[in-house]
Amino acid sequence: MKHTSYDLVVIGTGFASTFFLHKYLSKASASQAKVLVLEKGHLYPHAERVKEKRGEDTPYASLNPASQDTFDNHNEKKGWVFTQGFGGSSNCWYGCTPRFMPSDFRMQSLYGIGNDWPLQYNDLEPYYEQVEEIMSISGPAMTPFPKKASYPLPPHSFSTVDKILHQEYGHLYINQPTARASVAVNGRNACCASTVCHVCPVNAKFTIENSSMGVYEDPRVELLYGAQVYSLDLEQDVARKANFLKDGKEYHVAAEVIALGTNAMFNANILLNSGDTNPFTGKGIGEQIGLQASVYLDNLENVGGSTWVNANGYMLYDGNHRKDFAACLMESNNAPYFRLERGKWRQIANFRMVFEDLPEAHNFVSTTADRMKPAVHFKGPSDYALRGIENMKAKLPSLLSRLPVEKIEYAAPYESEAHILGSTRMSKTAAEGVIDSHLLHHQYRNLFVLGSGSFTTYTPANPTLTLSALSLYAADHSF
Ligand SMILES: Cc1cc2nc3c(=O)[nH]c(=O)nc-3n(C[C@H](O)[C@H](O)[C@H](O)COP(=O)(O)OP(=O)(O)OC[C@H]3O[C@@H](n4cnc5c(N)ncnc54)[C@H](O)[C@@H]3O)c2cc1C
Ligand code: SF4
Image (cartoon, rainbow, N blue to C red):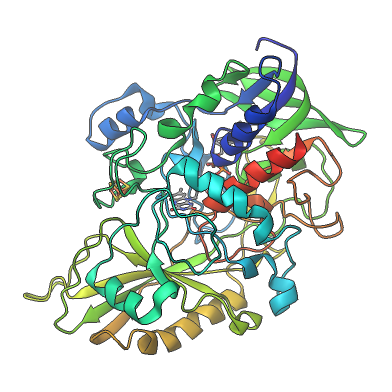
């Protein structure tokens, strides 16, 4: 560490921190700002990850902790999936980037569910656009959410089934907006639909490593690897220091401003370790719930499609039904699924049906005797989400009536959607949540709590585009 005190200390190097820093650096003094970034893990370069996938040895493979060893899971039926180390889960994410719908921010006033967010779709619109530029998102001209500019890259192509559903439903069935590039861009190759996005062999999806290293190479920024933050010094309504362990030694660094970007689970743990007494801190952690619907087709070959998830269906997403049960977002899944019947191999379509859930207080993060390790308590999805699944099963046959459907089979829900949400929710006042619309803690006004822990309600849409837009918004309005 070069200094004992910094203008800004950022914790973590995933999407939340990187987009926050991106905006901060564009606004801060060109030469004088002193920024320290504390990252628990290390850089595990893409080329080395590909080697590991090929079964070759790489010294990087053991540098970062296995995520499952970093928390106590109090529900063995529930998985929580993420990756640690430089770039966070940008290394393993799949790059699905739909925006939220305007109604997602107003669930209480429209449907009497949960709370309204303290900011609205229109506040985020310019920041959605900036994130889409930075990530070089591929997407269609027509979307169910309002959009002023076109997507930077052309859309991916539909499969046979997608084309039929798009003809039927128009802007409610669209090419998925995605960070899997449709054409080569900024050193990334075009996505070739190999559908192993966890480690993309051709580096087609956006990652922090392939597109945002400039943030960390900025001369104003000092990045410490292997620096695991366990608490903050919170005194007289100010966050004064970040406390961390590196190479077995304790360090304490002072900061004017601190930004926590360690994900919804660890942000809550660090706040609780620091003595944050906001009653909502750690409460309401959860995920969306998803399951696979396999649609068997009578004599229709479902071919084509140029990426992993080709399309999004919004037919069961928005509307008055959200007063009673969860919205559902359809993902048309283009992994190579086959029917095990001679002559009918490709006569199948697969959809991932994703449902919103509710932030419920009985799902929460608590501390453990090991200050590095949060405990996660999760009872299960809400009745609201489960009713959404039943409604979908009742409606799907008629929604797919333009297709020659033989039968639909449903799998059990996935144990995780890999989207950790809601543990430090955003609200107008401290009586309803932890942070304000600028992601600043209601009590500690120099402490940003970034990421999808901030979501007031969940929505069925993938969270990362929105959490990145929130980081840009927060930094733009606060410096
Ligand atoms: C397999 C998979 C597929 C996914 N696909 C999609 C998708 O298609 N679309 C989508 O929208 N989302 C997807 N997600 C979710 C997406 O990856 C997350 O929403 C996103 O990564 C969250 O960003 P973040 O910066 O808040 O946290 P993270 O990406 O988790 O980054 C947290 C950072 O903090 C560091 N850190 C943690 N604890 C500490 C500590 N104590 N001290 C210092 N540093 C610390 C970590 O090492 C890491 O760098 C997927 C996730 C997974 C796992
Ligand atoms: S579908 Fe294939 S090429 Fe496209 S992002 Fe995923 S792994 Fe990469």
